[in-house]
Image (cartoon, rainbow, N blue to C red; front, side):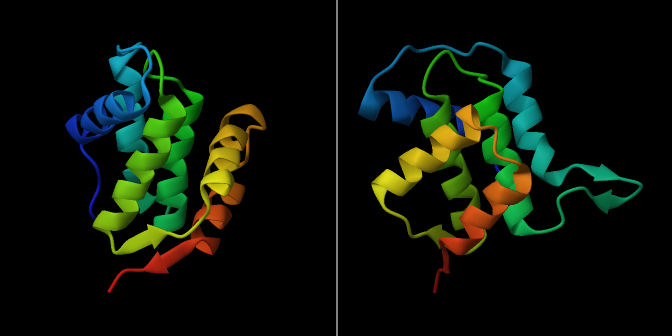
Length: 128
């Protein structure tokens, strides 16, 4: 499994603000660190999130819900997760409306990690 690094998430965040606007700034660097580390977390030598879908869900959930940036957390969370999946051979095939609704629901409706993973798996396609 290939995991994102903190600098990649920050670069994605900067790109999201460049494209879509928003307030620059990191609200809490430790929350970015925590979000990047969460997908590969272990307990007693076993991954807490053993599938790529749960790992991707852990990443997006942490970036969106914990609001580590001053603005653009949903965009950064989604596109960081998209990058993580891409690095591991997957893409997401969903409409813009589905993606926007999904990202909002991760935050506002507090979707459980299993529901997030299910959405990602349902809309995933294997890259060639």
